[in-house]
Image (cartoon, rainbow, N blue to C red; front, side, top):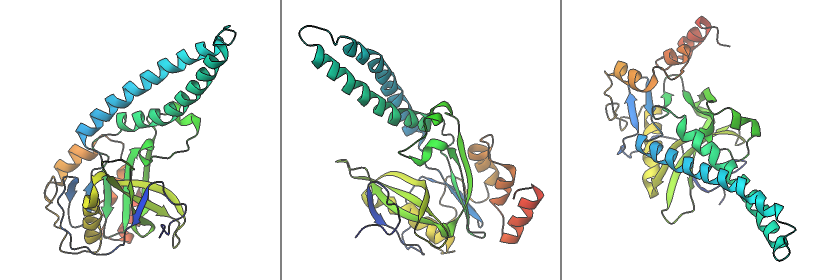
Length: 274
């Protein structure tokens, strides 16, 4: 049975239900939680270094090939193999262009993501906050102008009610799966955006984070707020490590701890946020 969300996402494996889960968290991605909000990091530092180096090498190789393949095309008049060289040059050049279209955003994604790119869930206001590289949301179709904006960021507030979990897999022999949040128009299954929640997990491990967040948002006791990297009384240390200096708007950082929609509205009014 296909996903109910439209358009579907490539590699869809299954939709996830909302509600309290009894699955405890066995994960290092929970950075901090208190009685108001929790923060999960989505990028491991070692993985970020590895993939930055990998895609840097890929981009350099593709650049060399992009320069080299046109020389095959220019040998069109070669008496013996001109047409074949020209054909190889054209196919190779097109393939390299497609490769660059994929590799450059991946390089930007890893190079300009910082501090684990935490995602924040406030259970008392039902709001979700992200501040991440614009290339974190793995779009396939991108306007060419984005290649000139490597540091472009997406800083947004979402409604938890409009976010729905989906598992996707990477079609490899390693059977890795990821949890993606489908951002839908209110009250519909029409997808308008995607948020990566929990990348690259083996098998069912991808459901642990989703289950913990749901339990937290539904005030379920299974979600122990002291399971994270920082204990609930270490908010200052968490913010110094993960939040400070990363371009989070001041009003948004205040909104992490808002205890009601009325308090959130007052924070936005004070900071002239429409």
